[in-house]
Image 1: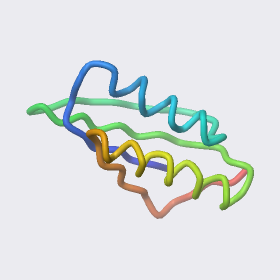
Image 2: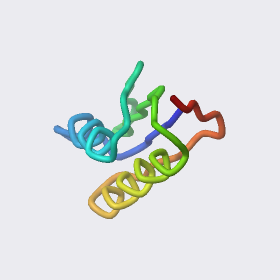
Image 3: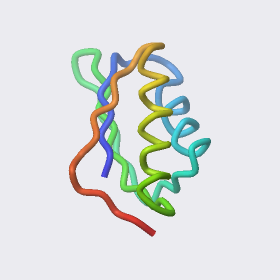
Length: 79
């Protein structure tokens, strides 16, 4: 599982899912909520291996420089 918290803005979900897909992650399920200007996104991902999961996290960290901060959860699922 992966959780992303960020300042809410138009296009944030699109940017997050694009970063996940570009890094090779497959989103199995997701949920989003926004409160007080903060977006909380949760994703269950399928990835080929831990290297692919690391690629997803690196891609999200790169995006963090442009406005959001990813938080990885400890439970990881490999496919």
